[in-house]
Amino acid sequence: MTERPMPGVPSSSSADGCCEDGRCACSANEVATDGGARPVNVDDDGNLGDVEFTEPSVGTSQDVDGGNPTARPGVPEGVELETPSYSIRSEMNDIDTPDEKTWFMELDEAVIEEDRCIQCGTCVAACPSDSIGIGDDDLPELVKMCTGCSLCWDFCPRGGLRYERQWKITGGDDNVSGAGDPITEFSAKVTDDWRENAQDGGVVTSILSHLLEAGEIDGALIATESDEEAWKAESFLATNREELVENAGSFYNQTMALGNLDLSRWEHKLPDKSVDELSLAVVGTPCEIEGIRALQDFDWDYQSQDGGVRAIDYTIALMCTKNFNHERLIGEQLEEKRDIAAEDIGKLDVLDGELRVYDHDGELAFSESIKNFHDAALKGCDECADFTGYCADLTVGSVGSPDEYSSVIVRTETGLEAWNLAEPDLEYEDLYNRSAIGRLQSWDKDKAFSSLERPFDPDAPRFIEYTDHAEAYGTERNPHEAEH
Image 1 (cartoon, rainbow, N blue to C red):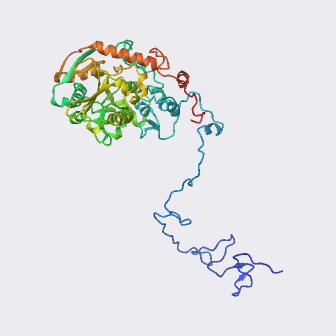
Image 2 (spheres, rainbow, N blue to C red):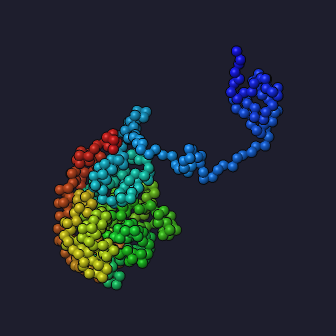
Image 3 (cartoon, helix red, strand yellow):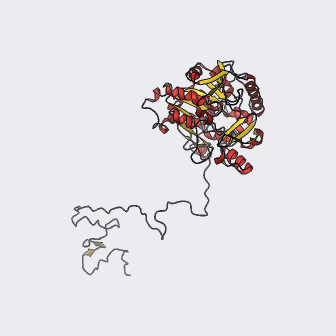
């Protein structure tokens, strides 16, 4: 029987006679005992020679079967993978989620998915791990892992924040009836020519301008028009009078304002000061002011938003019964259904129960009952009873004053200081019709009471447990266990 040589190993009867017992020592490519070959930089005595490295390829990958060498690997076409759900947590090391934890998915389930989000941005500002961002749909979304700290839920005015309790914490026991307990009230307007482009009397722009010029603030967070979409509001930090005048006027969609308090975003506009020395004003809807007041009541670290939260020293609320989704109002209701092009709109106003559209010459081009635009409104606004901004330093709107005047409610000593700076340049008188504000405030409360599924109780704890909210609203109590 002839012994078959091992594959790759020369026979002992090799012609040059240098191989014995299946081992070869005369070839530079001899096979080592481990089945490999002798390295080319090692001589017969085992001495290491010069090491040569092969230059790596740049911008290329291995060509497999003629495929695209730069393509990223992915799921093959036509193949569907089943992603593990959140419930896999309970299967890992038998870990149970503590009962007191509330996750972003609870907020998502109870508020965002239920179309109750009012786009104030408070949840973004509250997150101590910067895990919540703003999506392309202008709604909060999770951008990295949620830690279950509960703050996004706690501070949401449509979730865990009992906003009527915040009224009393901010303004006292008298701050829950009528139009609150203000220091003083006026009907006022600016007499400068730029007021023609402002909303009503232009008082907000005037007050902010005087605060800036007096060095009381370093900037004011206001709304500006998007460069991409006509009549879509975006957050903007104005740091001089010219920027304030240029952006005078109102928009009727939210800007997620409190989600834009990361000072690094505005550092190119802010003075070279420490964060502790900066002072800002914010103009927002009553729900946004409720949110910022609640955030400021605690010493928690809000990470990237913390400096902005702490820097806000002046708050101005705009009278508000409801706000709108930009695409539904401008795109669907006005452009598609009523053939009013966004670029032809010079001014929008909600006055005397009507939505009014003016052209660029200031002429009234269209008016219709605001009731006909209900489908474009943010549904969460129905639950709000805060028409006059109970938590603000100043409240400004048109109700209760003649045309071209603004109604001004001064609520705090801080608000009075701001008013006193602007007062010499304003034409004003005592509030023209306080009862008009009271009637609309009462109507707004009645609407809220009929829409709220939870009890309205200014004396109850400030924060509502998710389980209690879920019971009142019929929301899934444990969405992470229900394959949310």
